[in-house]
Image (cartoon, rainbow, N blue to C red; front, side, top):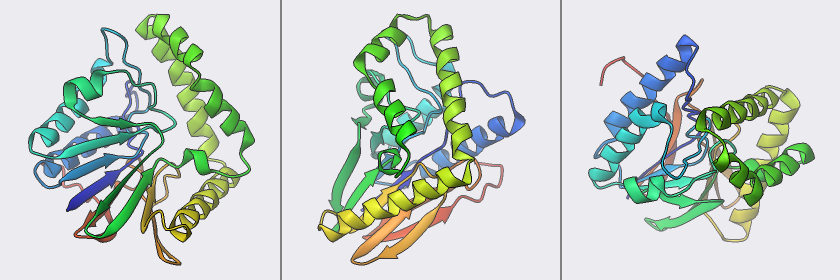
Length: 248
C-alpha cells in the first residue's frame, strides 16, 4: 500500500504576501504529481489556515486546492482529513462533494503489517494550559453556531485574527519545545501499549523521523518552510522533501 501523509499547509484565503502565493503554487504542483501515485492520502490537519463551510457557501480562494484533491480522489486514491487547530469547523462539503472522510481527532489503519496512527498533535502538547482551554472553547457547538449566523466576510475576518494569534504563539521557543516533547511522549505511549507501530503527527512544523522503543514517531513538518511529507510505502516509513522545479 502507498500512503502519503501531509500537514500544515496553511492554505490561506488571504494571500497578501508574495511567499503565500508561491507556497500555494508549490503545494498545487506537488499535488498534481500525486495524482495516481498513492492509495491513501492523509491530510493531518491545518491544511487550510482557516476553514468554515456555511450551508450554501464555501471559501472561493480554496477552489484550486479542492480541485486538486478531487483529481487525486478520481484517480482512485482514498482521502482522509483529520482536524487541526486551524481547520475543524467542517460541515458536509468535503464528504458530500469530494468524498473526503473527516476525522475529528485521529485516524488509524493497518497496512502491510504495520499499525499506523495519525493525528494532528495539538491535543498532546504539555504544560500549555492556555492553548488547551482555548481549544476546548473554540470547538463548543455554541461558538460554531454563532459563526454560522455571521456573514462569511465578517466570520472570516474574525477567524483570521484567531488564526494569526495561534501562529504567533508558535514562534516562542518554549512553546515549540513543549509541543515537540509532548508529541514524542504521546507517540511512545501509543507504541508501548501496542496501539501503533508508526505514530505520525503534524502541528509542530518541525519534520522528524525518530526511532522509539518498539516503533517510530514521525512528524510531517510543514509546507511553509520545509515542504516535507511522510510516506509509508509497502510498510516502510520515510520523511521526504518536495524539491520544486517550478513546473508540473
